[in-house]
Length: 568
Image (cartoon, rainbow, N blue to C red; front, top):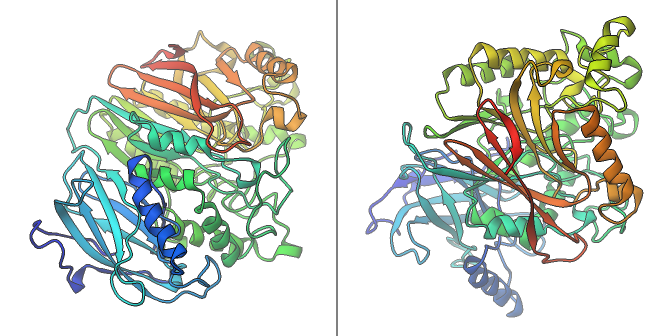
């Protein structure tokens, strides 16, 4: 990856060969978004459409994106479709040289950086540039232009991005759009458009299931497939994963979200296959689908090509977990909860959840998290966490009952888990993390979570069976899915049906640390971080089957240090 060179405005239009980034076959070139929110999308979309209408070819069909911001740099991404047959995954692309410009204004009157990138077929014609030498806590505009060849002069949509505050700075607030679980076939991505247009959002955090691997029609919702997956079959090969990402990135709402804000991302399971772990996955059959590691590596390569993330392939000693500092306000650690984990225990072996040797993080990632927590002086320690951390027990066993009979019956100490694919399946390691928080004197940890296609506000109890007496270790905010199926889809009933509401009440009655659950709606959480509190606004869309639906604030919860969650 090659860094941009800083230039004066007068020198900006002239790139040098030293700024060239060549996308290598090892997945070093990454990600994009197209279109833009509000005023930024129209001109670029009109220009691209004009080229098509005139019998030409639109190069920037998948837009632009940015991610992993630092105080002085941010990653910028696009894909250059080199000719009409150069569809993602086809391997039919040709090299395209691009000029990238970064400016402090939307009209590009003050260009502060220029650079060249090469969209290379080895990386599915994606390109990622590290724009360095930027000012902290500053909004920038950026764009790509085809530098030479038949389509020279064609310009991408304009993107906007923002660097993080300088070390020691004390920003007033940080706005995070917490999102996960977007299934193309299940409906439209209205939540992404709302994130793009929301002026309170500074960064979008996707905690997994950015795509789904299933074939057409296998996993839809109560309304069936609203639109079709590409490719039609389950994705297994590198070409398959590339094609699925490329198809997702034709969505105008997703393009708008990528172009409007920087993203922080991690994966969950569906970026590879359902319920995957270090050595396999529930949705992988080696006899029919080949070697799991080969499939996983193909999925990771496509992910690193198509998303704006500072990570390298595992074959090069890389890893996805990483951290970001927002001055003294917040430290964010993005975890990888799939690559190193043991297989989740089956219900018949549920006592394995207390096995001291079982891990979700792996030893190196556990040490990394400890190092970040032990050195953090931020007001808030936020964790980008793909699966739910809070203990959830199956009703009707209340925490006191399950705790009392655990030793007698050989049950897990924290009770019978609701979902062993979550942290409930790794209870011993979870207790180690809770002890780590106590040992470091942390009363400011908040888990930001997705995965379970529903909305939750939770206290993380020190001891589930003695809550609230033993106190609160942390808080957890769980976002709804963008549109992937939830309870009302499963039972094929209207939202807020009796089954959903009964299940919500039963879980909260058996788990008093669960303060609010909503099983039916889709959307995201607007997380507003301030020094004294965090305000989580759950934003819902009423009908995911209709494009362009507005979102609305459905519930608000606040988090205060050492106090857990409470209605706002």
